[in-house]
Image 1 (cartoon, helix red, strand yellow):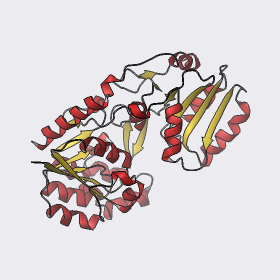
Image 2: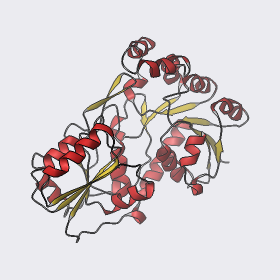
Image 3: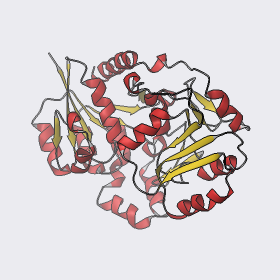
Image 4: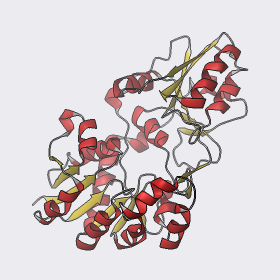
Length: 349
């Protein structure tokens, strides 16, 4: 008999839902219904919409009560705290945690954060989204899930989702110019793009660097002004408009390596999150999925051999990486599928 699960995503992280679906749909003894908002539904690929129900937040509870789910998984809990709290009270619930420090905040800590910047936005969260129910939500949940094995400790359980797409892997070792890709939205808040540009000014090798995300505002103007100071052998590509999934995939496949200059920390709803400790970077998933070696800041903690610490002479490091091979067997699809299913079985039991 098939085990029936509900997966709820009303906010964001469509790509995580898709990765979950890719693995879950492989098992005949597991049936998953996906309950999503219109925004999420519109960003899903048509082929991924099987077993998907487009529901408003008000319709979620009646729908759940009409079914016989063994487990409800909440993909993102950054809004609708009252709804999610009610779900956790009435169903065996697991939450994918994207910001561990936020999940540990008390009601007093949340109130203190509300008085900081973005006051109007947080007051809306306080009243409309019932923000103060967040601490109770995380306490009532049966399991708290994290997507980076390094962050699994105590109550946080590692849920394997990301695997290397071998059929999509495309890499041309013989092309003359190195292609270095910096994936993600171009924002100085999460990645230090100025650090990359400063390093590029002294590069002597033929190289193209692609900022694979939309750049805007002050950072866009900084990038445009910096072009005059880059050496002729180095080209910098950037985008003023939204990067489509197809364009993103094209550059990721062609990249010789990824360069991910993460900031040490960033703030989520007033809670300081540390990359590699309380917050996983999506660039880890990028490296896994596309089978790419990636350069990260030294303080980022990662168990993967293909995630390398940035060296002082990063140009030399980039040139050396181009001709090296790293073991991606740890993120082979079959292995991740088995770990994924075993993890779900333990949660349900």
